[in-house]
Image (tube, rainbow, N blue to C red; front, side, top):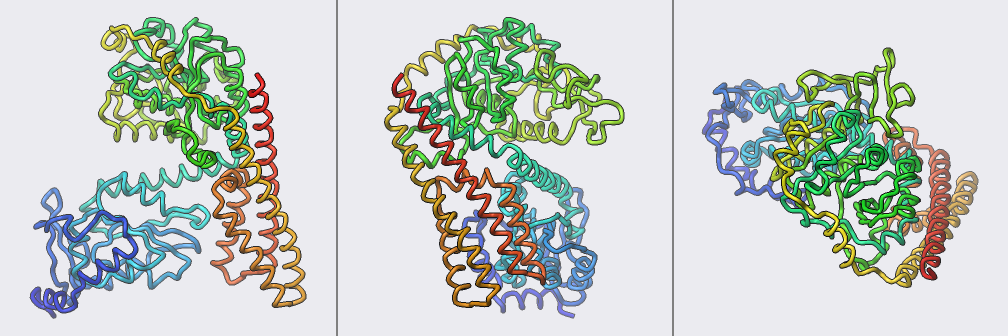
Length: 631
């Protein structure tokens, strides 16, 4: 058996460090981790195992000494751990702990190219040491492996979000080193929770796009003229520095303190979600801003009878068009990374983004933060079901228990689960409300240079937010007068509106783009029929000819930055289904050409319909712009 001196002699002889760093940089060129990033940690010791292979011994925070790999035989240990991992074709294995690479190396050999790995190494010191101990190049250069290094939860989440692809991966399988789970237990628990949340949110996003994708595209294109001719929300950023802001959501607890908002008027910035518009109007309370981001037609119901000209609208470009067209007060628009941003080719000023986790309350919170408001106060932000099953306050379109699908009753709560409540007890919530709450909690954690107060007086606990009554908040923070209306008016007056002729010129260019793609896709559908006939007659030359033609169109379509993003949203469900099927075919022995052709007929058929829809929407937007031109 080799002693410690022999182990280090082998390391020096092979010069693993230089080779490993070279391989690592080839794949992770943008990584901030370098050989000089982290100094040596005396709590980590490199030792020889009984079978000569190097192992690691770590002193945990509690003083406990733990071997991250077996002190007897790290290779056999890795083989044993790998043999207990059960996967299906297309699964993603999340490995907690890279260590010296034994387990990941074994898993790569055990499973073929149909299985991918996301590896988390929470300790940069271990990673630094591993670089000089064994050859890790096969791991680093494998296209099936992505490695996150470090104990940043935000960084880990960003890496996983980038790597995770719902069209490739069917399920998540967990594996890892027991020593890592012991020594780095907290990061293990938190990172696994984040991975679960990321998968859930990705699934929710896919479901959302499948359901409301057409409304998103329709709203975005039909709002094009209003977007170009109104100031961006970023013109308000920094305008209310140090001023308290009250975010009025429409949860059932709003009934408890809505009347107190009268006292807040003129002493805080009041931002209400669209759902709260009717209850506020019934109480003769005029918020400074109403925030609306939802593209579905039902969202317009909240605004139909809202008649105040004193409230300003903060809206997303994708919002339901009738809201923008009929709103009586001033308007501020947000881009929010819309597909339409490329349409302008730099010809328009920035409008500003409002990050959101899916609700107008999120956008209102972000707007308040970027306006410089402090503290940010939540009311009506229950994110849970009331005792009588209500999800919304009285006076909203959702507000009466037992009258709509947003309530629950005994025997109908299988998807509900308890969470901590603001009053110290528990309340029932569901997966969607929970995701909404997690967005706020993550925001509070990362944007912690501001005070957040939950004055909902009911509902679910929001971690990181102080719990106070609205009466206490008004007494403590809302003592100075603030003229919100003057700021809004001045900001509107300073806006330089894009000439309608310039708006029309952009729309006509995009219409030409849509027509070009429409003709190209029609040609592909024709080529697919010809390809099928060529395949049936085994005409190799024609198969090659038609395949090349289809591929050329596909490549051109993929490079398009104007129309394709809108089509992707419209045809998302079909595109996702076909890509999922194609990935499954790659994983199986049955890669049937006829099935592939049939899939792509469906794929391009849906793209054809979607491009036609985009073209029609652009024509409607042009008509609207022409009407504006002659007003």
